Image (cartoon, one colour):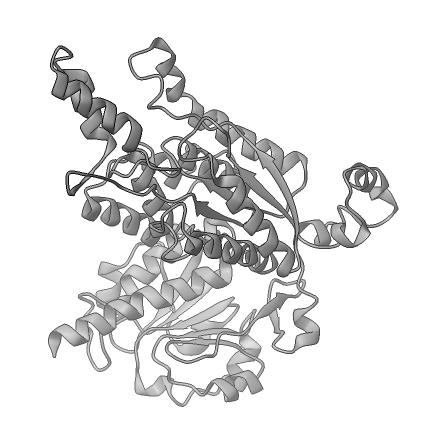
Length: 468
């Protein structure tokens, strides 16, 4: 029973923080969040393991001002919570001027609050209900933007001039949702004729330029084992974007295979390629005024390169990994590239048997395109991208040559248009929880990862520093 209660409380912590971050993003500077209830449970001042502690610390980390109230636990809370927290002496003082209220502890007096009167005190009528105390329809009827756990009551939103919201659950308002190029009028109006002329010269028309403009970062080339097949996947991504009502713009960047120059001085270029790729993605996205990105890559430095570029660009983006190659079979067992490397570096070339085995593996150990079929940086980074939330669930381990990978490519194309319309950016996905999940995942896989920390933090991103 105790274990089940602990699990429920952990889930509440995660969902409350997720809901608030989904609503406000990771930058809450200037917002005042009112926290209702601080104790671990009602009728006690016990603050040990209270969900309010991690919630409040997370809000402060995001720049929010936190005001808190609890009927009994204020003294203990003053000891255990950060000094930045302001304590209110009643529910009215708590909610006065607040941008949102977050209910954490299920105190009986919170059940019968006069929300009609309290709404007049709040700057914005936004309530996050961590205990499902209130009826969603009733709260909506009172004009609240209401969030709760375990019920389908998260409204779609658009913002008024104060940064508050009005509900847009009906289709007419949903169609008015905007994105960067539309909001700023980048390709509409008389002042945009020159921009439109350039893209019309590329074959696009007014209808194309009125839709979300999605960049496909395609790292395909004929020299990289993990990238030789990406044109095929890019075509599927393009189809998905068109199906969802976007306009695709495909562009390339360099993608090397670090296994080729091993033992040569040219291997040193592998040390800088990640940053060159990141800069190329950021520059293209900014100069071409794109609304979103699909990042298509498979191997070592290339995946973190495009991810860092996407993060720096500060537009919605999603990763599609190229997938692992099929595994070579020899003498009834699986054989991978590292076994050939061991033979090459330590072989007795005078031995006929060794020469024959090396020749066989040379011809068969790489049976087709995809990341080398071993737990090196390439496959680790593919899985890590999914674990961080930057790729569709289940997509990273699908083999490069499978039809399932093509289906994921089409779904990824559709998904990026949705992300753009909802304005969900990497900074909204790469939360502290996501980064810790990436660390745990990499350790659990016993993966090899020389780039993860850089990609998770935007590698010194000029536009934003991420938590964690």
